[in-house]
Image (cartoon, rainbow, N blue to C red; front, side):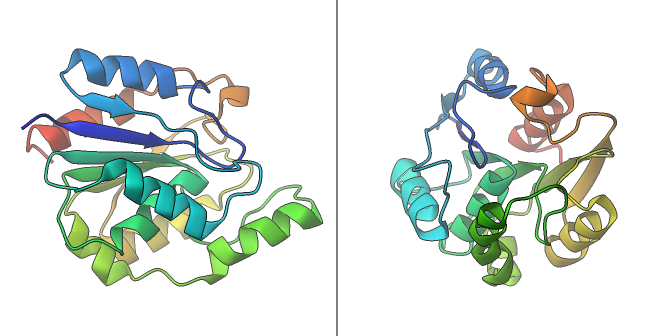
Length: 194
């Protein structure tokens, strides 16, 4: 059975941004079928629309399904995982957050983020959907509270956490066009070495 990977961009993101094209290319070289979808109304992401879009894209998930998320894409993946009854191969979350965002946010941005922060996630159901969750953070992310989110992911999801240095929010605007550690972790998962 061929391995499939879905790379889910973040808020205001798009498929050609930053490290997404590089990761898609690298995974395809390794035999994956890769999709980097354009998520609906990326400038104003909503839980229902994003999870529904991801659900339709994936179809029937299985142990050869791998999900990669960036920022709010990580939240989308977790909320998707709590809705399925199958176990998937693994998940890598980049610049993910479960707690409030920091930084210079407008009132409109605070309102958009609010449901994502306040709507509970069924962590037990997420853990039943995959045994492999890796979270990658940066020590200078202007939006994600590093220590607090690291602890949340480790305690609630038994996630392996990795801290990169000086990568900001891992956005295209941060100049991040490759993320070798992410590829390495996905490789371990898909080869059963995690």
